[in-house]
Image 1 (spheres, rainbow, N blue to C red):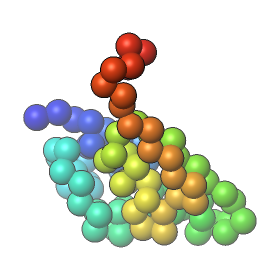
Image 2 (tube, one colour; image 1 turned 180 degrees about the horizontal axis):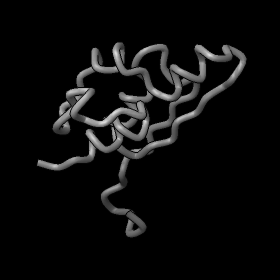
Image 3 (spheres, rainbow, N blue to C red; image 1 turned 60 degrees about the vertical axis):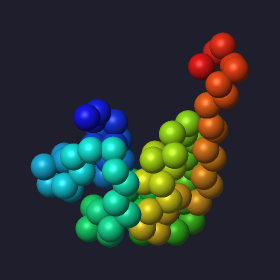
Image 4 (cartoon, rainbow, N blue to C red; image 1 turned 90 degrees about the vertical axis):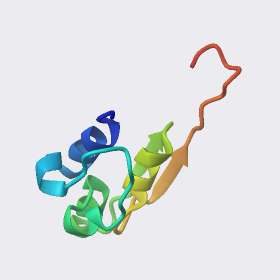
Length: 85
C-alpha cells in the first residue's frame, strides 16, 4: 500500500486521511463533496479566480476535477520511452 492518494488528498483538501477516509490509492469522488479541494474552496470564495492543475498522475487530476473542480486541468502522462521520467 502506498500513501500517494492520501497524501495528495491531504495537500489539496487540508484534511488528514483520518478525517477524509482516504487510506489508499483508490479514488472516491464523493470524498470531495464533504472535503472540498482548494480549487473548489477558491472558486466558492471568488468565482472570478481561475484555477489550474498540472499533474502527471491521473488520480491527482481526478481529485482536482472533483466537486466544483479546477477550471483548467492538464494531465501530462508519463512517456515510457522518455529518459527524463
